[in-house]
Structure formats: structure tokens, C-alpha cells
Amino acid sequence: MWQVDLESEEGEEKRPLSDRTESIQISPNPSSNYISVDLNSVRTESIPKVINIMSSKGRKMFTQQIEFENGSEIKVLIADWPNGQYAVQVIDENGNFVASSFYKM
Figure 1: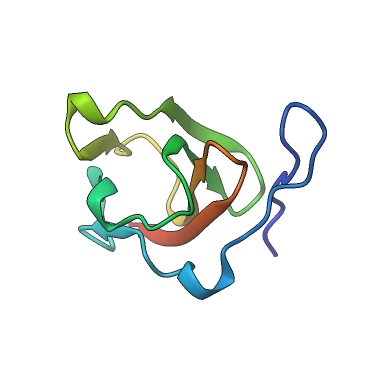
Figure 2 (figure 1 turned 90 degrees about the vertical axis):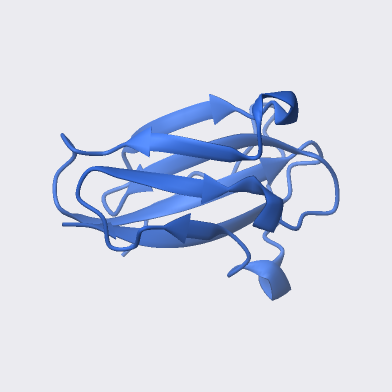
């Protein structure tokens, strides 16, 4: 069962864009050393601002502000993480988000 904090820092509830929940391209999947998240694949209602990765136990493993001038792909080293499934969430400037998952082996 996923335990994901869906409240913004201002206490407002974030809204999933349910018709777009599979729009984050993550490769390789499964992976053992690193993942690449293709930000060009993310479709939100406004500009994506933050990427979060959480374990299946709800622990935030990675967070980063998104700056498109630095490229459209984020690489994350996961070699030291425990094996299992992880949720990737990209949040836009309005608090909407898209999510997907990957497996660390």
C-alpha cells in the first residue's frame, strides 16, 4: 500500500491528473544503478516544478526542483537504495501532479 503525502506546503490538497498518470517516461525499468526521468514526457496543466521519489513505505528518497534550462532529463542514482517499487511524482506550479513507478532490483 502506498503512503503518499498529497498536501502542499500551504496545506492545499494536490490534485492528480488521473488521465495522465502514465505520462512519465522512466528508464531503465527495472533498474539497479540509476534511472532517467524524461521530463519531455510529463504532461501537466502548467510548468512542472518538483520531482519526488518515494518508497513503497512512504519514505521520500529523492526530491529536486526542476529547472528546464538544465535539460529535459533527470538522472537519479539508486544503487544504494533497497530493492522494491518506488513512486515517481512530478508536481506542477499549481500543485497538480502526475505519477508513475519503477522497480529497483
